[in-house]
Length: 531
Ligand code: GAP
Image (cartoon, rainbow, N blue to C red):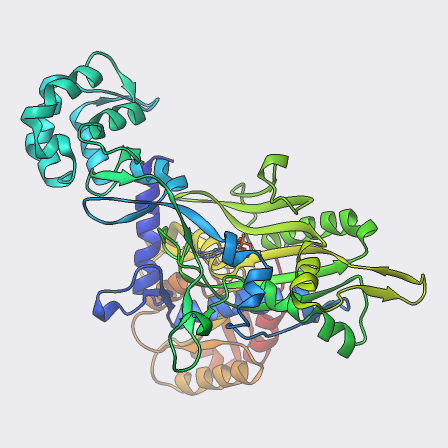
């Protein structure tokens, strides 16, 4: 997909999302806040359904996994033991001109999304292999026009008379790799101890990378000093490790078993981006599965496959979903194996969930730092061991974004006059759809609203999220529900009042069938778990 196609398909999704109340920018009336998002009436139901599907499949339907709900702020020693205080950081570059910060390992992506780089490519001759050819004249024209507006921080732009000839010699003889051209443009006036690439925002010079810890700090109590420093948790997993002994001692369970948790996590991401994909506040659904070391490889394979299939069963069955095993050199030093469930978003292929064999690293670290014994004593085999941990760790917001992306579809459907028209439809799996059924009286008279209200009430009583709508032409009402992703629309018409039947329209196939009004709740409930 080209950058333009990716941007426009992401734009279509974000605009529907705002218009129909899936996702809003946080604090929007104050200009928003970077990296924070709110879920609207449809979005909150969708996200809740994702979490409920996970909880049902990972905890309630299993005998070997129990749930937990831990506090967000924990004793700061937890984060020393886990390695987050010392090592949970990303390499950060800072622009000396505009003072913006960038993740060093995201620079290649950031630079290709930069406005000034795009305009430079337009000004020169860019080819599909990522080469750019800039003659002296074209470079000069760009500096005097677009460059002077878009790349104000660049020494070459600020003082073209001094630097232009030298730079044009380096970039103008033949097509050169875009990166090399950008480095050459940023080189004049570059202080020592700088990154070679110019700032993606203003073209200014960037500092060399420095490590930036991603944990949000806060203070407990009245004094704001070192002793009162605490952190918002950057992952839910540590709350599980800290309660592993409590669960073992209080609940009749023994390895192999898992502890699951869904909850908010916070990371002060340097460049939150790609909509909700990389946020500063997000939710995780994590499970730590404790087992005998000799069984860890088997459980790892089991969870890796099961977690991938979970996404498939909930509707990510296109070729856009992948299960990628990490290469040995990608693994954290303590991890024995790791795989990512990845999805091809319009902005690139990115991770939804990681499944890792973490060995006994976490429990051993907490044993060391807390002084508490983390061994399990098996009274049948008389063996004492620190369990190995298999961790499937997913992001609720990322899964929700993938389900939204996959569901978004434009196809043809007949309007009220029977003419085919393009419609936008969200083809969610019925289990995830925010509203399961919409009920419409054909007209607002002849007993139809009363009959429709009865069906609506019966659905609500059966625990089915239903929506009642009597306003506008029937075709428009269908369209609104298509955009909301409602799998079924029930229309009450003249026959309903005489023979008690209604029309049920299927969102995806557009097929209509007639059934008894009394059967609507059971019909919808039956379809919620279908493929
Ligand atoms: N306990 C392991 C752990 O936290 P991780 O890969 O850092 O591993 C797990 O995070 C999952 O949490 C990711 O696969 C992703 O779905 C989600 N996640 C992580 N950072 C995120 C962010 N900034 N915004 C949204 N989701 C995020």
